[in-house]
Length: 221
Image 1 (tube, rainbow, N blue to C red):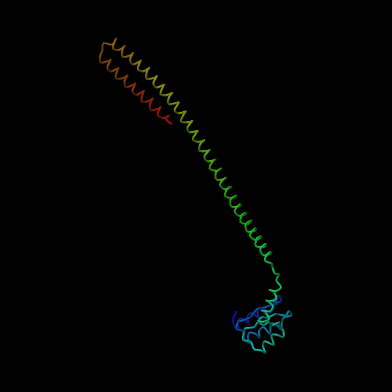
Image 2: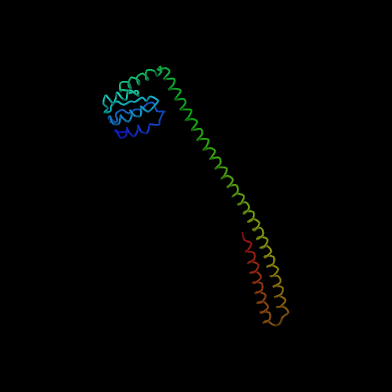
């Protein structure tokens, strides 16, 4: 707050205030105009107000009027009271001070240890949870891989069985064709008929083998 305008505004705002008992207005460039507002404030209050108002441009008459309804304190009075307060404070011996400093250091160490312990516990808990989650995911992936491997093994077995069956069918077909060709060559005088039958049987055999191989590829892993 600076100047008389601020002092007048402050005084007007404190008209209905009954709890304030001390007000420091030192070195605020207040003149008699601003101080007059506080004279009016003090005259309307039932509770005495202690003013620290030195260092302003207030005349002796106005200062006297302020003193009638308030406790006006000078700089010397303020310094004297502050010195008395310092003297009233208990004096601590060097031994007591060292003990207090040691206790304070111990308290700081305890707080630091507690903070570090909490941080470490939190980190370990998070790491354990993270490890369990990834272990579960890894276990699920291993189970899925094992299922796929079993399916592949089963398909491989079926493929081997089918290939064996194809081999047996091919062998029997060759035997039948060989027997048929031998019979035709032995009993058929017509060479052209023998050639046509051989061609027809070879085509049928090729078609059969192609059909079997095509179906066997559908069972691949």
